[in-house]
Image (cartoon, rainbow, N blue to C red; front, side, top):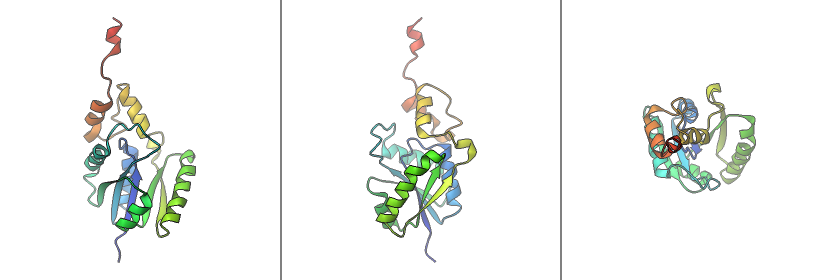
Amino acid sequence: MEKRIAICPGSFDPITKGHLDIIRRASGLFDEVIVLILVNYAKSNTAFTPAERVELARRVTKDLPNVRVDFFGGLLADYASHVGACTLIKGLRAVSDFEYEFQMALTNKKLCPTLETMFMTTDIQYMYLSSSIVREVATMGGDISEFVCPEIIDDIRRRLGPKNDKSEENK
């Protein structure tokens, strides 16, 4: 029997507990899950380099033996064909996510007819959560411990945390 490989693609800038929830659940359904860090050409301002995002994702998935992390800068359908993946796993938080993801699923199917897309709804506790929210809260010095795994909190704070306390200037 052929190995069933799934890909969880995304920019993961940074990876959140919501992402990890989808990855964990997918790892129970497939022989191998590849967390694929992609370049999102629509997002020119990333907080972390692709290599840093790969490292952060590896740290939070280290306890999942059938999960590996990779990076690719080209077409997702090409990567899926290259590794022999049968399924793309896409997490959905709200109906607003669906239209774009549905369009991408149809495009990937056209480019790679053997590739299926599976939509997984996020756990209710992560419905509001996104990488952009994590970046915004961290930039303002807020507590991100409910949003990301402890293994990467310090990395995010170092990169995004407030550089100085502007309230001191007003004293």
